[in-house]
Image 1 (cartoon, rainbow, N blue to C red):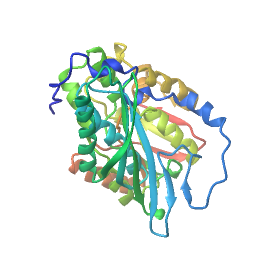
Image 2 (cartoon, one colour):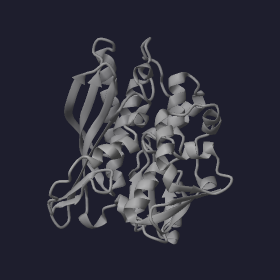
Image 3 (tube, rainbow, N blue to C red):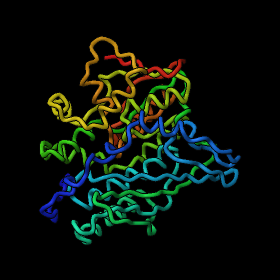
Image 4 (cartoon, rainbow, N blue to C red):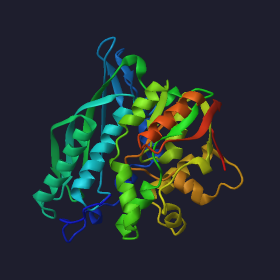
Length: 353
């Protein structure tokens, strides 16, 4: 896939970002400390999913058949093409709705822009990319909010809908489930390499293709497979998000490192030191919850903890239904695979070769 780097000004967009995409998120450990200081308020009866289990979005019941899904996400540039960045950021924001088993309906733009350093025409390209993602996902973009900021940031607040009886949550993994991952990992390493100029055109194209691919088909497959536990893999990496799911569900998860798919070339970059700071924070945060078997090395752990931008879904389903879901997704061009399973436990992650 061509990344159309024409029309990029003399200053590259990624020069403005202190971190690449979801890699600029506050680390999971620091975020947990903040959330622990916030006293939970009274929970209304129609709030079906709140903040208790760190889910991807909030869900509010409207009636017996309908519930609203609300989420927001924004981040710094991950590529230098403004339209592509807009499309990636919007696709990523909508992913939280899919991770809850829902369908996005409409969105509002969130913009921070250095008006003295970058032209308005470039911002128009970012917004056009967001609108393209909306059309691809079937939702409309209606206005939003902007501020003047030295560091460009873009994303969306997205509202969708889901049936109250078919919500997917972090706490829904069940012993016996097989774990399905629907995109390759390594986007954090790839976008860091873009910032440093070390990324090959082939890696850039592969990372961009992954980031602009929606999780709509994956969400449909998860619901059809009878999944109840699901999340999307973003800034906390596969290990971070799986740790949250396992703890919220009261289970242990076993993962075969050799079954996890990665973008071509990211392992070599990681071995050479091209790893986002967010990925290293993720690695440190999960250290106390993982049990790696012999043969699982430090590079493996860093890649499994790699901070993803617009990553795939991770869901659990009965093994036979998970296998059918994987086959159906592969037939649609989605690189889904079974990477592990779920057993009774207390939130541990067992990593095998």
